[in-house]
Length: 566
Image (cartoon, rainbow, N blue to C red; front, side):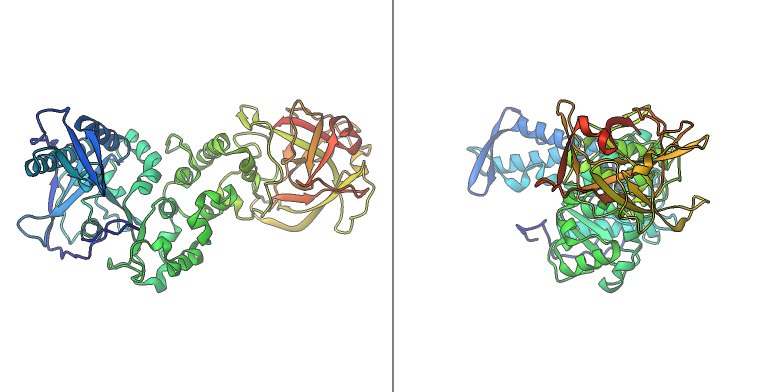
């Protein structure tokens, strides 16, 4: 085995599997060689420098690591003492993993002490946390339902290499041991007890971190024989594999016959140009985003997820928790819309203010609806497929977004508007500002987009016309990326506006006064609504791209700034 400083430990040996001895450990291994004095001080040898560490501190840090950083259970595998061509595999709980690591560490400690009686000197690679390295498998479940589950393993079901799921498990362990010099592995099929709701909840919440902490992610492409057909593999279409692409530091792809897809790269397919080209072709994810996923916007991540498929509808949301750095309880049966609403709420609560506006960068949805579960929030990742490349750096919220029983509390700038036409660039505005909007709305059946393009004149003087109809409708455009604070007399209005179009119905002859809880009806548009606000008098924006208007003069321009519940 050879040590590579730039990547995980990689060995060149291979083992031919004939049959595996499956050992399911039910009893914790107890250390037998621990020194009698737990206060012993030993030197941890790491290169030129030695660190003096009390034994009890090492064991304490090991326990914390095992019970807080490692998966709930791990596969342990090693070559048989009797036959090197055989691999012994067992499934260990956390307590058993800790006992095994503690026992082995104390063995090395005693051995080193016998060799150097003056002090306990232990090479760094024998540090028990270093010995807990594990490989992790990313794959798609067999469609034949023949995966080896936790219950299969614990019940001692008769498993051999004729069983397709067992072959996958064995090959994963073989690759991990022979090529990456690790003795532990994790795969979701056998390492999660899905009959335990608490364990399933912890596993789903922790999964991104488990993939991130793995020494190597072995990615099995069951439909691919080489890099040439890799882009069409089902692995690129599944919901859970999106986070499994981003989370691991080191990831290598394997074909259907368990051979490396790309042999030119030595230790990490994430750094391979040819592999990255395939990933971009299959998913649209660029190399820049692969290298720096945290720089991807909310709408960009949602687009990545929009075309992926899941077996349980709620997984479309649960599988995105790690990618957005949020955590929420797992509640299968709540339905996909409620699960996504909770995901969006968690994103709103944790995302920085300058980034959160991008969560409104979506189109689609029902034609008009009251504020209910979602209000004007997105319904699912698919509504982001038509998101725009809007520059959200020019505009940040000065009040926190808060989800309440009345809807989402958000400050907006309301602009009156009137229906226009494609050639209505010149019209009489209420004040000094004007803009035009073109948008496509949902058809009457609410399932297909209308081919008709509608137009609005922003701040058109006709938006204030007196109506003779007993029930009139008025358009309001809510700008989301304005900037203001309660103690500041001026409102900063961006030249590039991101907005939502609303209808208000009134029995009066003039547009109604709008308050925080006024019932508004959102017009669903195919793409996000954005427009450039212009000034009749040629007044320029400041260097940040904003107009500044005193609050006292907003009404003169047909504008209203308030905090609403949408």
